[in-house]
Length: 240
Ligand SMILES: [Zn+2]
Ligand SMILES: [Zn+2]
Ligand SMILES: [Zn+2]
Image 1 (cartoon, rainbow, N blue to C red):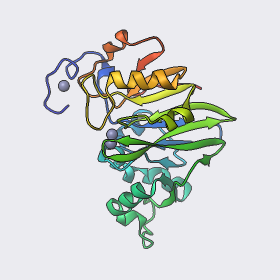
Image 2 (cartoon, rainbow, N blue to C red):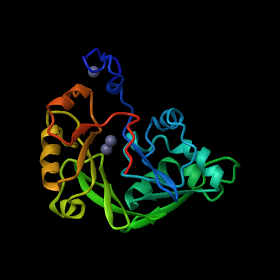
Image 3 (cartoon, rainbow, N blue to C red):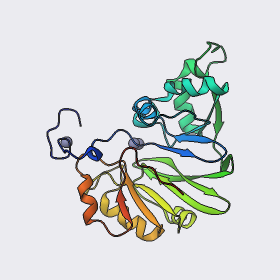
């Protein structure tokens, strides 16, 4: 948090220094990123990302789209960048990044988005990506379930304020649940730690990782969480 001297902001644990939420998935066929937030460039440099074959957006809040422009590096390598988003999010992307979506965008090396409006589950390589519409305050945003060969591998719900029963049915028993847990205190647009634990108890994943954490919650708080429940940190890698 800018200008904050709280215990977490001054913590010597490097895992307490957090950039915006995002995940990068590598599969044998292709690699793709979910959201390109304000810190996308910093994250791509830190992790030495060499290939992005597609981008999937959860919603158009600034902490999830403001790194879009930096996809130019990966777009140029493959000629265009497949962009998957809901109709509403795509509309916002086209407004904010009008110059990139314009047909007249013919600048070499610049980002050439190839828009795909999400209507239902879609495939990236052999990975089935199922949109999970969830409330995020007053709006509905997409989480995603990533499945391969019939196995539910990862459910990503980075921004949500509730998990409806229909979504619990879709992702029940998923291997890894990555879920919003902003802080202990309730918040109008994000799950609290207590609410995230309740949601996880209904979903029954193999492992749960909290994300989109604010500076009210330290990495050390993991010690008071139930078994198989973790606080995710920047740079965390999971092999599935
Ligand atoms: Zn702070
Ligand atoms: Zn949001
Ligand atoms: Zn967010």
